[in-house]
Image (tube, rainbow, N blue to C red; front, side, top):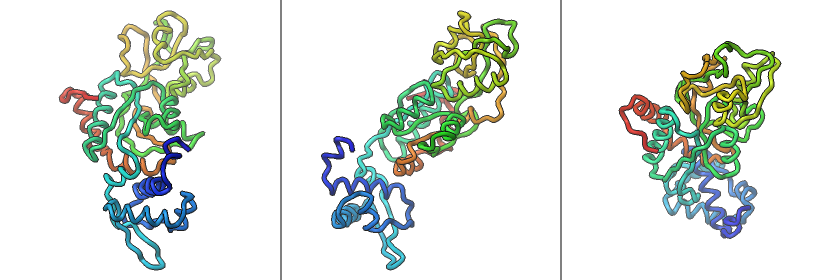
Length: 307
């Protein structure tokens, strides 16, 4: 339990918990019984009843009793519920906005989210999907942006995250390329030293894919040092984001990376699976159509990025 929660009164704790629960429930759905809430929150029945009454009296929710069928949520005010839940702002994390695609995605997300419920939304920027997920699960960020490929790869061994929004093809990037240190190279060969960054789920997965069946040496290098390592001959090849123009890629020997699917090009929003209330809020805040339209306007140069 956090220091803040230790200082909360039983009544305040119950109201916060119930507000989050009602945020996550659809209008018309059955709510839990007082006894069920009592077990989950570990407070007295009277405290639960009083908390529900306060939420009803404030206009945050309306409930309808259907006798033996139970009690149903008939109305909810998301703005008021957010106040009771202690959610006054949101912070997300995504890749560094070094391309028009990322600039457009960041601008579009911030614009659409802030315009819906008038909640302040901030965005932090960090390389490496693995690091973004870890920081989000540790509570530093509320949501994270990454490729669908990275999210699905993480979910194969850890189900603590949930994809709540998926955008269109090329919403994340156009694709990846293979970089070589010499003009004579045309493919991955036995004996090569291959740069790999395990903090990047996409990059490390693609490196292993192109090296399957080859006897190569993997060299652990941070993503932002891969280009320098190629130029200095520290490694012979690596995988790079086609849109990341940290240098003029035309000066290097590159070939397109053809993958089995396009999941690496699709942007998704992920949250901690345990934060059901946040999923409901994010679904209410994010319009895929609006994000796509704003992002495309920035890519086309008809709108100025603002993030």
